[in-house]
Length: 261
Length: 261
Image 1 (cartoon, chains in turn cyan, orange):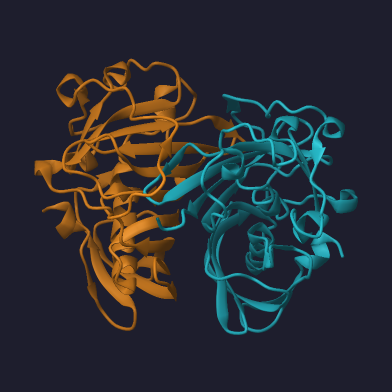
Image 2 (cartoon, helix red, strand yellow; image 1 turned 90 degrees about the vertical axis):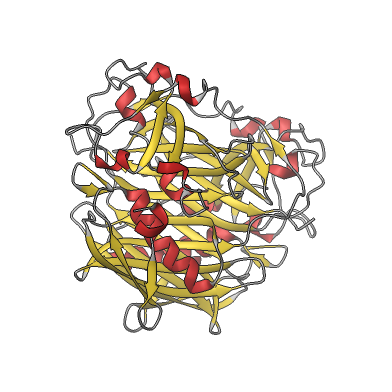
């Protein structure tokens, strides 16, 4: 099953869309957050008739498991350039996530460009370390996407000591990556804190915001994630996604919860 | 009128709250975005009975002007540690902003702390440049808050050439700054692009996300804002707010629109 199929929604009634959490997109039994978000974003995008999620925020309310979901959408504004909508995904009446986003049609514009940094410094995908599904860890989700970690991040057991991770992302079988699939890319890598020699195991995502700047060109995406501040019981993870032409296609920031001490 | 008074909401019916955009909080005739957000966040915070906006995102739909507003809230989840709600502010039936946020009670926890940077390098407030209201620019909003810019950012006419700004923030008359007021601090400074010698005048904010890590100690807040990527018709502005004890109290990121070329 392709990502396009696994994230498909169909109109039900009254701004509500039906979708299905497909099996195999889970990490330790819970559906990947970016994948859940993609389903909800597709519903919101269709509700406003604009393909590209320019800025989308999701708050994760409960874990998602394979099976049917319902996405209720509310359109707040339909402007010339952008339209804004909310969406709530629920499964069996239980809320899974809440989304707020603005959608548009990217491309065609040039305008002012000024970038203070370029793509992360990564060896070619063939020289990076593939993350392959095993029976234990990594998890089924990595059977759905292709991840190649920077060799420094190695096999997840020889970690460099800083809360950073970088690598390549693409969908399996070179399925084209639309702007909704970028919402998966920004949440696909192991958490930065896995690489930092910290007394932390799992850090659940409370909230994830993604800004999409452009539709990606075909090919691998170069991705980099950094955490600068672990404090107050929370940590942020900032992401950048660059396409094969060296163009910034998405920025992301998520807030994750530290386990209570 | 204090900020607490100007951002007050009172329960109306059925999850709806009444507030008022007070005069004098505008920039070039439109109410400051952070101030509008504070009104909506107060309603959402009261709807879930949790004082602190841990992660709040707003999409700005139309300008706000002095007068009554109504905030309709929806509670998505009430958890042990956090509660998540949506809110839409409207004026005369027209949507002004949509909000999605998770609220909690900050403080009391220590836990793991690891910070890769400290507060911005700022001379003491007395050695920084006050932004004072004039009849033209700066605007009435700066009569409501106190801003002191880093001397390098001078008087807004002698700009350093990079899209960055830093300085001190507090409310007038040393009114205590609660975590809702932090939502004003992250949107109070002139845009970073004012300081960058770019062919840009005004860049409207599409979306603003704020993470609040801690309740601020009394005193000035040290604030710094940076833009790294102007591309695709958009730019981000990343903010950090540190309290007088040197503690990171908030992080923010907004997405602003470039005028169409």
